[in-house]
Image (tube, rainbow, N blue to C red; front, top):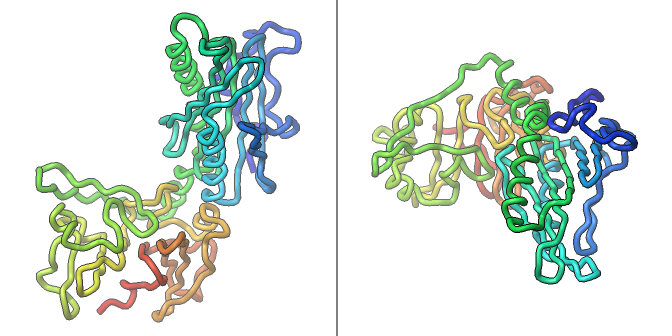
Length: 364
């Protein structure tokens, strides 16, 4: 649930900055109507089951609306945010009648790892017409913020600069709201891990052939960026991420992550050198939603919702849950299966492709 006192109107003009009468701030409130976004005859409605808080600020020729939604999982939130931007990407030009044309430009913003804006402007014939519109979409974990706005800019001698300035000012005004949204996002998952009291792991990055550090990205379905399951070990050896194990614990050819990475990361490959699984048992790397070693089972359920499989035991009696998209998957170990509860903590993360197998839990 979104707190009723969530500061949804932060960054907007304050009391006394409107022209009075019916103008000014309304909300935040759950009683305001939800925002519905329409382009080229298609409308995006608010999904059932989401919590919603809305606010509106109006002045002559200046209208602003915000709607904060929370969903059952970060995946569902991401899908809703994508549906909004996809709506406008599919409708970059629309004839609005009376000689007017609406133009929509979708751009990414730096508010979160998953945020974008739609800048709307208008033509009368072939000339810029009065009017600017803006739709901001920001996802943070299980929450999505949608802001719409319109004003009388957009014409004159420098219409492109007016559009850029409108986007800059609107984005800057959202920073405090987005910071508060961290309670629904990856920051909440990181705080959840911190509650486990695990030390943070920060190994020295190995250097590539050019001498530059080889940085790792997120844990993703089927990979630990940029290393992917299904690719050949040889390519990552050339890049500097992996090395041959000079003292392999099992028969055949084995490989390690290079340098200090080998103390917290694991790789399994077939005899032909195709990577079959990657894993980690250290709190340091994480998914885009802030899930990592030390996250609770409760945090996994909040992040992935119905996409998270039920707890299953491997051959060693260890309880695992996983998410899968297509052939790629991420699996999370939660300790002895008979002891798994909502507060159980992830002690190993493994990624793979195809059937969900736990390559590292029974390694020789």
